[in-house]
Length: 156
Image (spheres, one colour):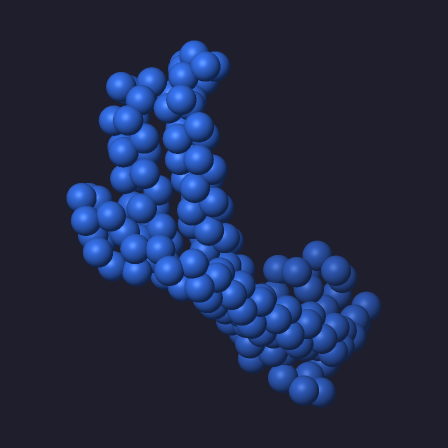
């Protein structure tokens, strides 16, 4: 028994993967630059005593991380090593710790957003390559014939 299989579905899946890949790359890049723009608009400068990027403007994931880290060090110095939850409710340093926690959380959120944007763009590139490969292995108008059954078609 001879079986005929069209490559049109494979080419269609390849095209869908390419379109999805382009969309993911565009979305990832747009997110990256939107978050970067928001950080630049805040005019945050990494503290001079940070482990890295001291004195530089916060505009990316690494300098946002190191600014959040140094904020934590400064806050712990101000509180004698105690966290917000460990301070007495009447302690005036508690407000400083709360603000430091808020600032750190905001900066860490931008670090996560950069990571998600990079992941989306990377997955987009992968989808693009898979789609391209699928379209290469299934040229237009190709029909696979001669297989005796589905099992032999899969083993071909």
